[in-house]
Structures are given as C-alpha cells and as structure tokens.
Image (tube, rainbow, N blue to C red):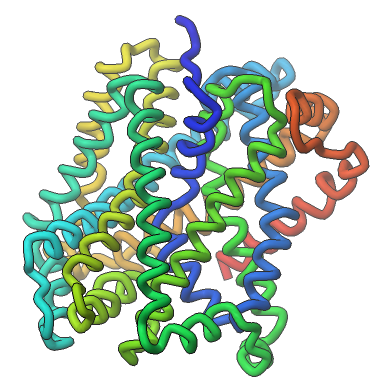
Length: 451
C-alpha cells in the first residue's frame, strides 16, 4: 500500500503545529510565566526550546521520514537486527491511547463552554458564584460531560477516516488558520481594556522580586519543563508526520517553524488572558479554574462579553481538537501499518476503544469521585501523570539515545536524514552535546516530575 503524504508544506506545518498547540499552551503557559517572574522566564523558555525541544523534535521527525512508517515499524526498519528498540514503539502508542483517555473529556469541556456562550447560558452581569457553579454543575453531570466527550471523539475519527489529505490536512488548515486569526483578534481586544498595561507588564516584564522569591533555579527548572512538554514529544505523535513528509526541506528548519507557531500561540494566549484579568481585578489562578471560572467571570462583566466568550472558547476548541485529530491519526496509522486494516475499519474500531477508555475520566468527577489513584490523584490527574511525568520524558530519552548512539540508528545516519533538503542544518560538532548533555537534561526533567 502506497504511503500517504501531505499535499503541501503548509499542511504539514499546520498539522504538526496543531498537534503541539494544545490546552497546555493556553492554560499552563501564561500562568507559569506570571508565577516565575515574567520576561525572564520567557527568555529561559526560548533558550531551552532551541537547546532541548527542537533537537528532540528533529529526531522524532527523522525516524518517521527515514522509515516512512508508524511508531513500531519505524524502529524495526531502522534498528540493527536483533535489537529491541521497537518495543518503545508499543509504549509510545499506549501513551497516545492514555493521552486520549482524558484529553477528549477536556476538549469536550471547551466545546461545552463554546456552546454555552453561543446560546446565552452566560449573561452580562451574572455574579461570580453563578458563573462558577456552571463548571461545578458540568463536572457533577456525567451525562452532559459524556455527551460532549462523545461528540469530540466521533468528530475526531470522522475527520481521520477521510484520509490524510482530505481529512486531517484539510480540516487542520482551516482550523489552524481560524485559530491564528482568532488569537490576534482576541489579543487586540484585550489591549483595548482599561487595565491592559498592568496585565502585560506582569506577564512580560522581568520581575526581579518574583524571581528572587521563587529562586532562579526554580525559574530555570520551570522553563525547562515547559519548553520540553509544549511539543508533545516522546509518544510518536510527531514521528508519524515525519513519515508523511517529503525530503525537500531540512528537519531543523521545519522543526523551528513548528516551534515558532507553538510559541506564538502560547505567548499570545497570555496577552489575551492577563490584560483581561487585570482589567477586571480577578485573580489569575492555574489550570481548569483559570479557563472555566476566572475567564467566564471576566467575560460576563465585559461589554459584548458573550461574543468575546464565544470566540475565546471557539479558539480553545480548535486548540484542543487539533491535538486530538493529530493523535488519532497516529493511532490509526499504527493500526493500519501493523494489522493491515483499511482506514474506515481502523476508525470504527478505535472510535469504540477510545469512547470506552474515556469513560473513567468522565465518571471520575461524579460517580467515581471517591476514586483516587496515583498519589491520591483523581482519574484525570492520574492519567495525565502517566503521560506527562513518565511517558513523554522517557520516550524522548529513548528517541534521543536511538538517534545518537551506536547501539541504535547512529548519529551519522540521523544527522544525514535531518540535514536532507534545503534550510537550517544541524552541525556535526553538536554530537557530544546530543550524546552527553541532552540526555542529562531530560533525566533532570524526569526526576523532577517524579519527585
């Protein structure tokens, strides 16, 4: 069966960036920036993105492009006879399934809020308790939450069942273009609010007092973490798009463009959120609370707030759904390569699997609210811990060692693949850095996440 490929370079870049751009860009990045001294954190983040994120991204793409296969078979194609690197391919795909077990629910939340703002559940002048209760009521209602999760999963597999070019690429192009327009419109609107200046300076001006309070070591560690996790590396989510790429452009150049798009969305998200929060004097808190309690409170007090709330949650729906269809494509490609199934059969079987696997996360907030798993975490946080703290750093370390050691594919073959095509090239003198420093940095992230 002939390997599918992207119709255009723009399609590849937007699909890959869509995979990287997710909920973490919007609800985690701005908060972590504010918490860690603003501009100084952003500077460290950019340094680590180039020093850590980009190299590992090129490795995942190189394994995909050189093999033209999905996770397991990619390793099998490139590894030395008798070696066992391909076992990580199975772990990576397991990681994709676990990620989708909770990401589909969170994406469903975004869709719910888009619908609620669109249909007028949120009205101008609502008090803070009423706004907050909308999210509390959503979590307590397994039917409502389950419905939006099911809609998300069905829509995701419907897109992927239409093929790479007609499904994933076409829909991602429209969605990502709309996302980039929405984010600029929302940011420009935030700048017109009365307290915008204070919000922007809190966000982007280096705050020496905060850095001193948090500790420069902790600021650097947080920047390292964010730069690493923002690209979703380690579970073959990017590898698969490498397998669909042409060889016209070097991987460092394409990787840099993906990083730039990802960073643009992350930084712009803060320019939407902080001016709005400062203008209305609401506390900037992390995680789901920021998106589903704090910001709706801002919107209901804002002139034309229903429109701005609708647009914001449309943007959030696109950000989360772009990741979902990218990971679904990875899972489907693996099944088609490994079991020889047709695309439609693969879509139907995996749709059923993901629907069933996503139920514990939905029920974890209501029917199973007493269920606490890893270290007392609820279902969603336990699933997230497995992916973020274990599978992403360990997987990235394995891709790295596979590409730069003589026991794996080998540095020379990797660098030749990465530098094929026009654009930014990786220098061979980076070999000691890739072999000794980079693994150490990823190990630090792994240990930090477990401690």
